[in-house]
Image (cartoon, rainbow, N blue to C red; front, top):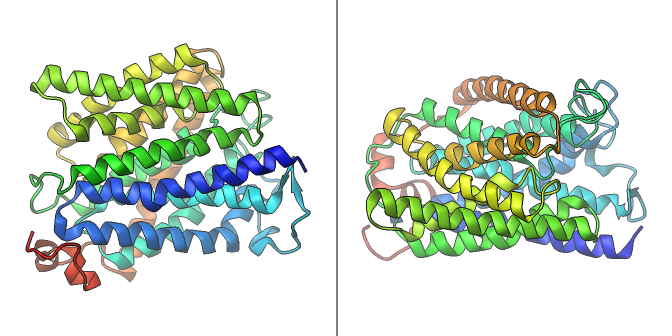
Length: 393
């Protein structure tokens, strides 16, 4: 056990949880109508609680168990049976590595929340998120990070897929699942209402930015120069994408918005995530510069051309950003084209199939969408019996 590594990953674990609670909750909550803000908070909070229990029960074992098939890790590590404070994973206590990875298992299904806010059934959120984490996310983790079929020595040979902190594992899977749920749900009855609290959006984005230092820097699993570089390039990409998004918005629409610049921040963070352990500051500058414009154009394409109501642009920002960053690893020579593109295709197809099946099955158990009256009145009061503000907004 290394004391410095352990101390850093303890901090990183707290930072990644901070990304969901309260960062993502505020970021998403500010983007919806006032009558739905508490429902977003509730969804993020309940997902965090449920994923924690399911990760302990089965998720961690599926992802990081010693399974020999390359497809899943088995159940040997279910409920952390047989582990204590002295059990090691590399230079870390394994219970700490479990906790660090648990925060990733929390934020990934929480990202999907942005696609279905303001019209989804709360029961569907919980059942779908729990099953999706176990049956889609955890196996993909095993394939890439747990020594499975896409890792070094797997189907792509000695040079396996490079995904430092989750461009494929987190952002591609969540982005594709979000898009599919948005398609099945159909659009909101009123898509034109602006974000009710851009201040919340900025505060949430700032929390995500800070938490992302743990997300990417912690993925080095050591307190060393690699962690420092990952943290640095993460910041550079985020800052650059923020500015290019705002500049492109100004050129196209005449004004640069607060919601726009902070959405650019998230695009830059998602895009650098898979590459953050393999590139330097100049490459991060390039990745961020492209991401700020590219993700904005995909937002417009999904909304206006495809007419899909991915409410908070999960696919365009997280999905496309993660895919773009994964490809840039090959562009900069840090990974092979076959491994990067092959993994994107395999994981993308797997996510589509599993998500499709889960949407169909879970919809038989609990309604996918709330009724028209509940949607009109807002989920806060109708579903949770509370409202955020003492006004009819």
